[in-house]
Length: 332
Image (tube, rainbow, N blue to C red):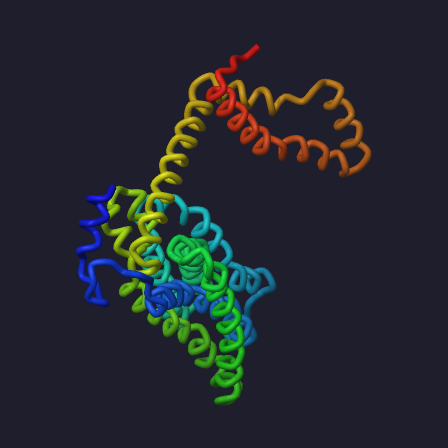
């Protein structure tokens, strides 16, 4: 490890020294601000539709159902984006997926402004929501994986702060646009500006993230330890970066071992045994549930509650199996 760090410390150093005695606060805050701009995207898109929906209703004669779909369609995309963000970021990196999320939002903002019907607008907002889901899920992760421990919470707060700023600024922008022209202009054109101006914060986010480094934890996780250490050295200084790199390597090793144990638990007949063990309801319980179901909807809660124990049971089994294997225990 000593040779590794000596090699890494020879990389170009703005201070002109082989060893950094301390990290760069400017570099660290710039990194956090770059990812925190994702909050601005979230804030803008949350509120922009609220200013435009009245004019969209008048332009397209939206029914209550279509109005609800136009407003909420972004949440569908956000759910999909958030659900896939973890897998994609582990495969391709935090920075790359954040950039892809920003690109989705940029394209969706322009697309929304140019649509000629409610269906196209719904599709555009689903695409924008997917970008929001990716960035919302990963921005804080990116910041916390890079920030020093003593100011990690403060830097992660930049996402929430910029989200609130985005909400406030969007309300102001909506008011200015709605007041700019006549009601006919707002119905024909004003709402397009409300939605399309979201491309500006998206472009700012993309430019900032292109200059930002990859998450040091991801770099170390995929074996690019020299590069990960170089990023940490800028943030923490040489000595603390060495300690942080060792901590990350130990954490990655532990996660790999735990993932292997879970796959073993979930393989072959173990999967069937776990599902049967936690999915079977005792005959007496089934009779009580059936009786309640026939008299009131409360019976549904009993059945659902039993199945909601399944994830908890799986996790408990995984933990118990892991401890048993390490302690040499055997099933009785």
